[in-house]
Image 1 (cartoon, rainbow over the protein chains, first blue to last red):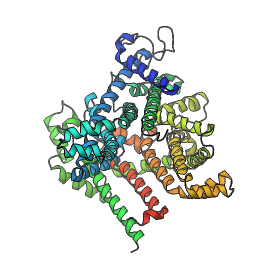
Image 2 (cartoon, each protein chain N blue to C red; image 1 turned 45 degrees about the vertical axis):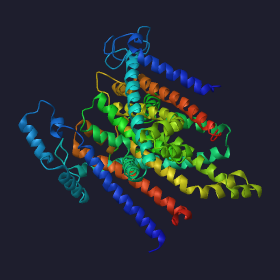
Image 3 (cartoon, chains in turn yellow, purple; image 1 turned 60 degrees about the vertical axis):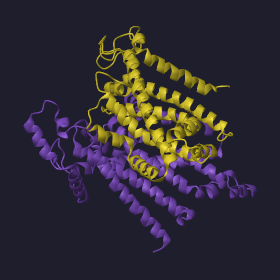
Image 4 (cartoon, one colour; image 1 turned 120 degrees about the horizontal axis):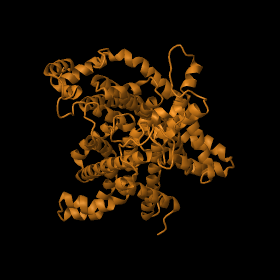
Length: 271
Length: 318
């Protein structure tokens, strides 16, 4: 199997980001909240990327911030996938009024922009990391629901599913042993896109001051902390923003490749 | 009543029903808190008297559905309620900001829509050659870039390094139209970049879909130039999908505007909403949230209606 060069770059970069996130305390040169220099020092041998708005090492903040961003985005994606695909597959198999009620409810939730809905909820909720994960996961599960239901409806009418139903298999067997394995490849391709969406969404919330709260910080929060520097020509805020962009692009490259590969498997559609 | 009119009024009735349901969702979004809203606004250290007062102010002693119908009744009479943070009516405060936001979003739409459609046509004309590849690459990049990255890069270069445009988009009434346009040049650019690539890409897909039809082959075989085939035969048939794409992206603009207004400190609805979310000013958040959601729903409804109007096959559903 040949991996195209773009996907390879994506894989390496994505892997790199995750490794740095996992081993953050061993890699970071300073402590996360440690003030080690002057405000917005330019880059030097001690501080490779300079310092931030209150004199903390920017590279250290970037490494820990990446950890927070990736951690929250991963958990939110896991939640949205588990919930969304389970409900979507169940709706497709059960059909009838269960399907109708859930689908109309999802239609309704999707008719409100996620960011606006999240802001409404966060105006009354305490903004903590578990709450952020749950809100992001629940809002995004509507998208996963749509996709997995659409995929499963097609599979549900196939003969082997019919045979399983006639054998008298229970709902759980049909969902997990008959439908899920066949619906997996489009779902996996979607996983990457949902992860990017979670990263961007979290960064946006933190940038607006409604995501991860100080002193902890993710990349979006770092942009917020350092944005005042821009008007003085200090680019510190651009570094975390660029990190978000690079992570998103590399995951996208991988997801694109997986998407093409899985559609190839089904007779070269979209190849 | 013609079948067309009937279909349209059905769609509009459905839209109104959806708006009502959205208002229920927005309202219950602020009711999901397991504890008490007054406690969460005032914090743990609040005195019992202050809590009781705020509860009475918010009407928390009434059941939720009573409050919902009071809120809805007020909305229908144009009364958006009173802000907790300064005790003023929300309606007049929002009015001007809504105007500013619509000005920003519509300027972005005026720039982005024709540009996207033109570039989409170019991409189809040079399919699978470098202009097309360039457009695909730009799409990938633009869905991965957060708005604030584009925004601050533009501020860094255009406002700080080269001093071409102001970094803060302040607009007030006494400014002339041109001065206003100059002030919002950078936010409009960000919004345009955010929606452009996606719109372009979907325009391309819509036209390519039509290009596979038999009548296009006929047009090619009778010797029309490639551009003429696209402009005269493919484009009219792809109006409905393109309008759909445009409306979806305009709806996206409505959301993108929230972040862009915060980046450029623009006095619009988005900034107002974000400010009041952190102040936990629930009535303001509900009112703004509902307005944003309503604009989004209405744009989607218009896309639906245009699709019906422009496609005879949809006018007679089986």
